[in-house]
Image (cartoon, rainbow, N blue to C red; front, side):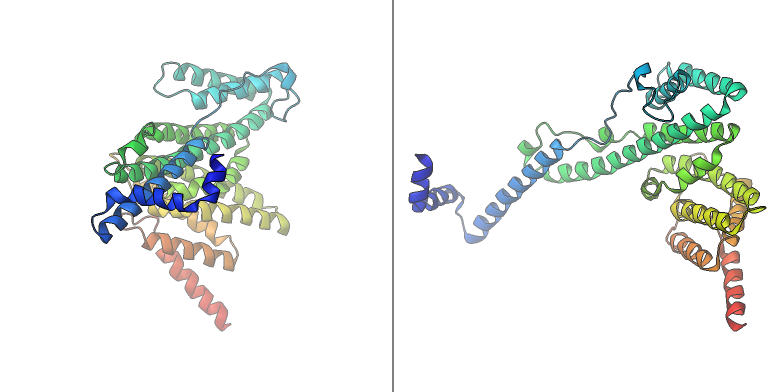
Length: 351
């Protein structure tokens, strides 16, 4: 009955609107300003409502306790031993480093991994590779939540003085949304897992995974300075092993294998060279000491020199862009190699 009346008498709606706007009268400009503010408030209310319905990227589901009925679910969970080791590594990843239980669980993981080195190193390789991938995903999700929290915090701070009622029940600051210590912990664990993979003879897969972590590498460029320090150390660690792997496999590699290696290392350099150029110290502890910096530049030059001429051009252009755009860092300096590469390119063109 109400719907029929509203439909048959549109003039009543106009009258209601007029009555609604009547108290706001006080000049055309004041009326327009108040109307726009009302519309903006409605829009922002809808935005925050939609955001509240989205799943939070920082929420991690509880670790499922492995059972025998899942033993055929994946190649990693094929035995009781592999399921147990996977579970321990998952707990290491989720327990806060501030907890007194963290050292106990980490020690247990070390013990199990060392035990496998004597009897079943392949089990270590499979489980550690899976844990490495999962840790990258968790770290990227943590950084993503930090970005969303920072943006949301800035918006809420800006509008709080106008519409405090809109923010009731949504007072989640960027500090609450992003835990920097958690991100640093995950980065440190990536390095720990990488070291375990080296001992287990399976660092190649981690090198590929680190090079393919483009989402993480893009976020790392604008991350907190302390987290950048941790990620630079992880990158330098895998960079060294990537170069060693390339040198060993290139000795007897056929052309197809060489192309595969080149693709892997192009991906690695394109993903993480921007961070190496843009990362600033920002902390009391320097990112790398002078010897490590010189050694890393040498490795970069060796890896770039093994790429095709066009790939070298692409990598050097990427380096120059990020190196020139970073006012706080003068490392890694590839100026000498860039000049030599250009000179050689000129000679090739003349010939």
